[in-house]
Image 1 (cartoon, rainbow, N blue to C red):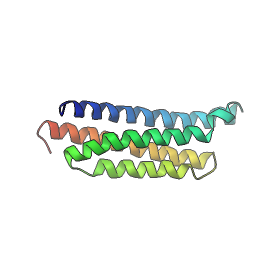
Image 2: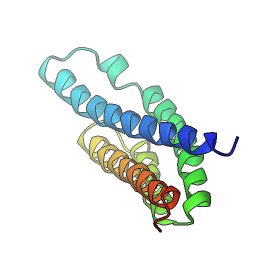
Image 3: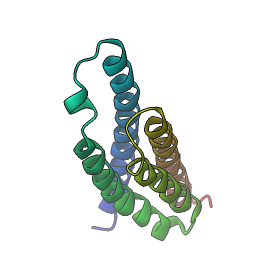
Image 4: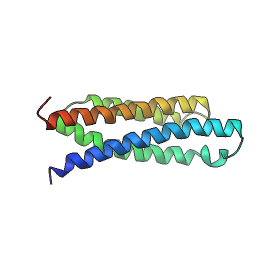
Length: 130
């Protein structure tokens, strides 16, 4: 069973990277579509999307990066990802628009970096490198 954990954790890290990219794309596309065309604001900018996205990001990061930190004993991926999640949470406190998009994009970038660092550190610990 222990050999299956790195695989599951790595898949969650990759899912976290994908989710972060989709979130950034959503932020940029929402602003462009709503500003340029004026349609879709009621569902593209719905606060629920951001709340649910943050919950999913929190769960994936907690499991993937938490398990990785236990395995490779490095805190950098955890700290970077938690800073990113803090920015994402802060984005929920500001009105929709450029400020929210900037905070969210900074947040998802840091969460992505946390997942990448986690993959690199875990890969190094599995191959005997520290």
